[in-house]
Image (cartoon, rainbow over all chains, first blue to last red; front, side, top):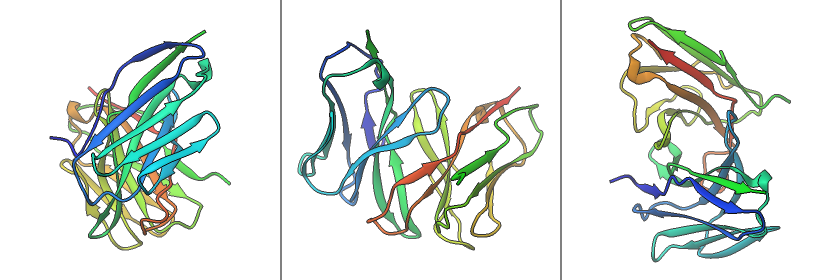
Length: 113
Length: 115
């Protein structure tokens, strides 16, 4: 079983829809929770991060963490075609030799105009 | 400010050939990582280096070696390439070693095909 599970999609929605992306994890040692966005043929870029249970908002994006359930979510409001990308959840694992970032498989999102 | 630079961007190898992927960062970060990305598998950690002079295995280290040449450079070597190593390789450098600073900056990737 992978430490981080994420539905790879693809997820296809109409422009303006609310998008919900989710990950579950099994390692209680994970401390920080992040969402990366990756456009085609590019490297991932950090979108949001949070380190506590609860919600964090940034414009149209809301990151939600529930440590008791080991479940994180990313919500995108008023989705735009420019949001079409792969979204990867990532978690910080305080390993013996320094932090490691563990990623989910990534969810492909397509927003149709 | 280039961030993380990877070379080459594309490479085709024959089975059994060797090659080294180069990565350099100009952000003065201590840590550097090598990931591979395959469809449906996400980013899987090959090796990482928490600081100059240290390296450690990640999730999928078999068939690879690394060298942390100095603080800026972290190379990944395939000694005898196999078709299973066909993938997109990303070098990344996080802002810090502690849990407080884990934003990772990624290079543009190296698309490697082994035939």
